[in-house]
Image (cartoon, rainbow, N blue to C red; front, top):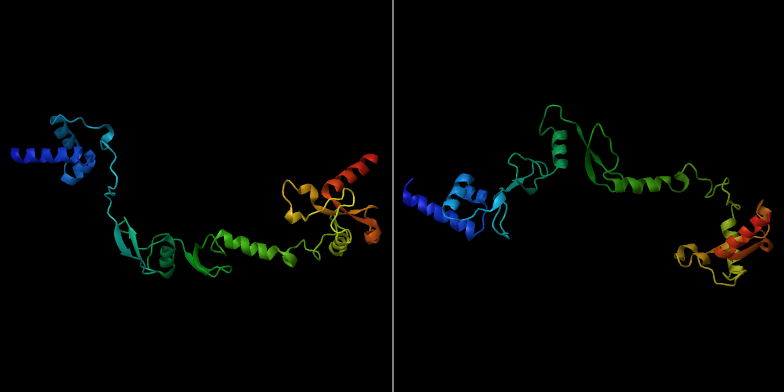
Amino acid sequence: MGEQTMNQEAKTIRQLYTEESLSLREISRRLNRNHHYVARRLTEAGIKVARRNTPRKMVVGIQSTRLVYNKVCGVCQRVYQTTKTDQQFCSHTCRGIAVHMGLISRRDAVEIILATCPECGEDFTYPAYWPHKYCRRRCFELAHSKRMGGKGNPAYKNGSSYNKACFRGETWDIIRQCIYERDNYICQSCGVKCIAKSASTPETTHLIIQCHHIKPYEGPEDNADSNLLTLCLACHLTLHNYTNKRR
């Protein structure tokens, strides 16, 4: 290499480093040189080389030097981009379909099963050793909620449980609603207007409407209108705590 060529190359290296703020490795790739050679030429020119082989200042807008290829998926025929030269499919799903259809074969390849989600109707794949019924967790939760609701639940007993401490008869919901309407949704102890539990907030929890048995419930005969009162939650708890202390 002639001296004139070396001087011209050294000038180019200085311009790339000082004006374009390229790193040593970026300059070496552009000139097809070793980065140690680039550093030596800068040092000979009296330029202090930045440590860790980084640009002297941050450069905005410089794209990665990795090549991006446009390819066509071998299964769905969709055009996709990748940095890998040997990639044949756009996703793991398409690769699984290709294995299942016999388009590609690998030693000890896991059998991929193509199925349809019974909840959303979308097609999906899964390995044979890990059988799935649904394409995603959300679909499983929706189906499980439907399956376990109402009569599908093994603990279902006509909408109520006879073993619960709060059980007050099969028609209790209708009876207490009639008592609320009779008392105009007003607490018969403090006189405040009660609210439904669904409409309550942390500040108004004490106003939740409840139905109180004057004589403690022992059987359906205790659900008579004369034995029932509308109370707010605060008064109901106060009354029961006072009764328990007297006992």
